[in-house]
Image (cartoon, rainbow, N blue to C red; front, side, top):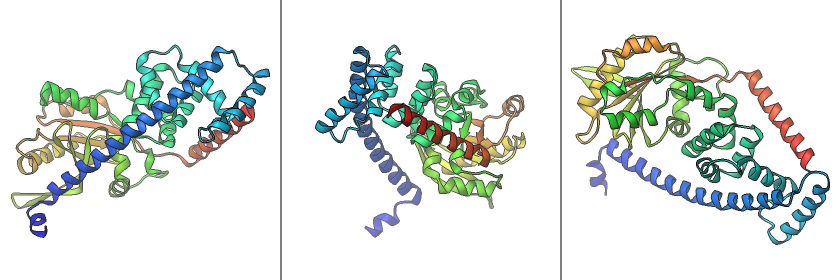
Length: 345
């Protein structure tokens, strides 16, 4: 066993471990989706029943209270409180006239996610975006709330695609890269309330690498930070290095705490050349680079990328959550939850 391990490089073992973790997680997610779908189907049918029988507030409260008691005697673990029965009716009425695509998206969500989205009174387009993102990135309720508060839907809808993928990658891979890689990333999960240096930002991301990989998108496996490349007697260090199974390539990330500068592109272009020359496997596609900065100007990026022959994207990020804003957010959510309780009970 020890001899076999010695013949296996650390990168090869890391790839095996990452693949195994991804397969287990995929299976767990599939099981969870089936459970959520079954539960939501039951809630949908109960909500439809209450809607069809025209159970409304006032006199309807007595009916709902009695129904809750009788149902809980037979199904004590199903969460059939009066408040939840009213929520089931809201769930049905919110999506009863929605298209099939949206219904399929919300069917696999956890019940708490659906209630949050209903309370936020999202449009169908917004609801579909947040439902699919929640499933894709395995968002818990707090991350979903944070994304809605930051209006992630509008930010992603209106953002330019600042990359040169169409010029440097085959059409299929360019399409896949645009699908997987984003123009803006939400790093609010780091909980930062004050600016930090680049090394501190990198350290925070490494500490929460699993959440960061979910934010990155599909199929990412973490290889290392300050990844060392040696060539011609010199050392080079890539801030963060990943592989992506769907794109079948290495993905290098260069972290910047300030605004985009054109010289960052030349540095990333060199990193990608070194990765393709030294680290890339024969069966892998050429490496892709992401310059992740706090702010960017679309025209500056376009000019900097126009004569570059390596696939590079420039993305920005939402990072700081002001303390006062965070406190107000929490207090408002608590007040809304209390008001909802008072109305329903």
